[in-house]
Each structure stands twice: as structure tokens, then as C-alpha cells.
Image 1 (spheres, helix red, strand yellow):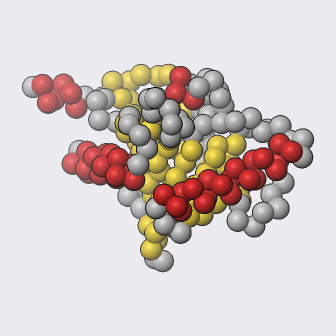
Image 2 (tube, helix red, strand yellow):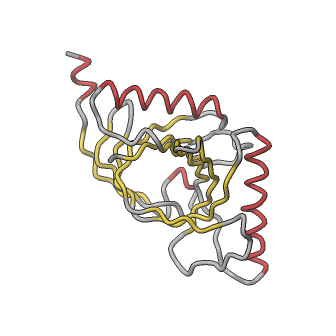
Length: 191
């Protein structure tokens, strides 16, 4: 009986956007919580834009190099007088395709004018509005923690017959690595 109660989804309409608590009063993607339970949230997210660069692997060096490319782009925009506010989250997308894994690092771009991108290693990624399944977790961001939570969410969705796209995993970090506490998420998209 307890298992049945825990597996029931509760409808919790709630909208987040510019000032979600874990966005630290910085712009972040808007979404509505559709369902929630102890294992995941189902969210409807609006269409978003992201400044993105690819990563050849998932090592710390790959992440730092990609982060430096995005930071360089962000700083060049600010130096050129373009107003781009600091935002959260940082998004790592891992796509399994015919050529293996493709990984990218993205920073959320709030609504407004699109920046001109001259750096060929940086591009604008447009994501359509979507339904996603989210698992939140704390702790210092790491590949291991992300993989553990990705596997837990994937297993829960599969075990409970919930359709999702297993080919694309999104990992989001909402805090600096050096923060005292961290809000992290793993996302899978609904078909």
C-alpha cells in the first residue's frame, strides 16, 4: 500500500522563471511543474536559447576548456556593450547517435536580442518547448554523481513504463563549483 501511495503522482501546478530559488535571482528557463513524486518531477518547459560549444569528452579538462570558450564569448559581448545578464543553469547535453556520444556545454540565454556570434566554436542552440522528466540532486557537481542520478531516473522511468527519449541526457548545474550547497538536475525528454 505504501509503495502504491508513493508512486501516485500529485499535480502541482507551479511556474518558475526569472527568480526560481535555485537560480539565485538570475534569469533561468521558465517551466511549469505538472507532476511530482519522490523520484522525479514532470515539467513543461518553454522554448529556450542557449550559447553552446561542443566538448570532445567528459573529463574536467574538457569541461574547463568548453567553459573558457563560453566565458570568453560572454566577456566579449559585455565588452562590446551588449547587455547579457549572468544566468543559470549550466547545461551539459549528451546525445547518443550513430557517431557515438556528442557532448556540449551551454549557458542559458534569457529572452531578448540574440547576440552576434563570430567565434566558430560557439553557436546558438534553440530548444523547443518540451515535456521533461527531472531528477534533482545535491552535492558537488561531478560526472559520477550525474551518472548515478541519470541511471536512477532512467531505471525509474523504465520500470514504471513511462516513455522517454533515452538517447539524450541533460545535466544541469545551478551553482558555482565552489558554492556551499548545490542544486543539480538530470533531465530526460518525453517523446
